[in-house]
Length: 277
Image 1 (cartoon, rainbow, N blue to C red):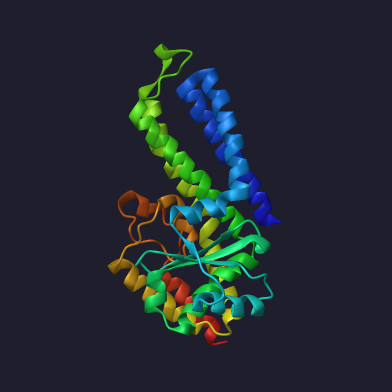
Image 2: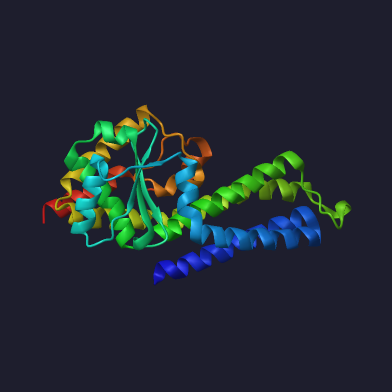
């Protein structure tokens, strides 16, 4: 229930951003356009956010014959979850995420890189973590945030190229305010992502350990992902960074200030505490 409320609040907040953008760049006509865009985005984000995110990473669905599908099926049965769709992302950087609007319409995606470097027990820990996100119903708000944040960043970049005079009153436009808005819009989106992501990772780690039967596989996986991820950065959009099991290391500079993941060593400590109970 809490995640449903958060999703509504997120949609409302980011809709307000679209309305503000429309008003700032197009006056009353822009406001109407912003409303239309917000309505379309809200509808699309709820029903199609998973497909949008998977397409962003050129993810390919795999069938029952694939080892990842078989591993996911065993863990989903253990977690008493419907079988999600399973996807492979054609990237060498090791990472994974879950998406979808509910457990009945969920998908788990893993990169080619993660399949190469992890043992079966470690990969089971990762997939179990993602299934815990599904079980906790985190995936809808995560996918919606990714879709809407990506849209805001796209609009902000568009504004950088085409300027921001108000259609009804060009003399009263404020270039400084418009530039500030262009800069702050993606930052605001990332802050929203951070607010909904940090504590969820600890919960998903604990839930994944329960599904897998032990926290040690996930512990070893997180350590490997941290090390290999730095060596082979993931070509990821900041708008979707919060969805991955570990922070994509392609993001640097100011973006790093808005990390959506708790430090890996803290996650490992929490999991080791579970192992010693």
